[in-house]
Image 1: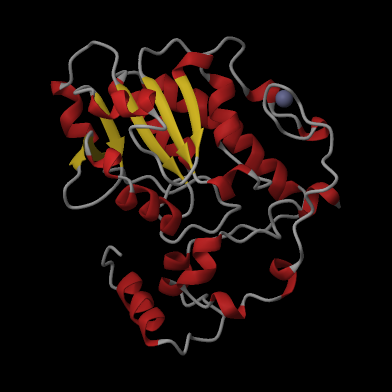
Image 2 (image 1 turned 120 degrees about the horizontal axis):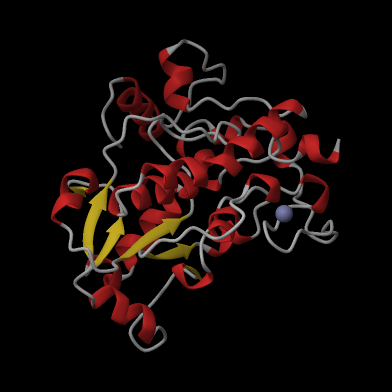
Amino acid sequence: MAEAAEGTAESRAGDGGEIGGEDAGGLWELPVETAVRRPECNRCRRPQKVCLCPFLPVHPLNVSTYLYIIQHPAEENRVLRTVPLLAACLPKDKCQVKIGRRFNEDRDPELSAICRNSSTLILYPGEEAANLEELAPNLPNCPSNIIIIDGTWSQAKDIFYKNSLFRLPKQVQLKTSISSQYVIRTQPTNRCLSTLECAAIALSIVEKNDDIQEILLRPLQALCSFQLQHGAQIHHSKEHLLKNGLYNKPLPKNKRKLRKMELLLNNVKI
Ligand SMILES: [Zn+2]
């Protein structure tokens, strides 16, 4: 039951705030157990009983790109995290995780230098963002840096807009049509990918190697199928639920939230 409950009782802070969060109730209101941690596997950081190492590559992937994951502090303590799996698949120096909400020149000279480097890209969607697929053929072959923000939508937005450093690198987005395979956490839309999926796709594009995506997504697929076998429910995105008439929570009374639901239904990017 311990494993079965993992994941199902979770709700992203951002989800709750977006649509109908106040009606979530039930399991989601249970306090998160942090005091007693089960023994963790050193490599994948999963509880030892559900270690995902058999699904990780035997040797770290040989990539030339340096990934910098900017992780919101709330993300670090979540039970189901995808970044440790990503880090376990890559050489240590190629995947660095920086935890925090505010970054600046004085406190983070190394990160500042990365942001000022002309071969650094930041993955954050928006009108200003270039599509990575279209940009990739013109990228130089020399190692580049990719910054990815790990957190809920609202956490990522806060980090991106409140740190001027992150607007220095070239902004890119993934124009991908794949739906998230990370079905055990509700995503706001079908196109909202987990940090691991974003990294897998971005790396396979810039490294021009589709195998990277397949190898990096393998542990995520294993994680999802394990969770589903042990009682987790598939969490379709709110977009999927709304469009298929499956959204069974009362409609929000708040006009702003109602408007957001309308936008989701009409395919407007929010
Ligand atoms: Zn492991």
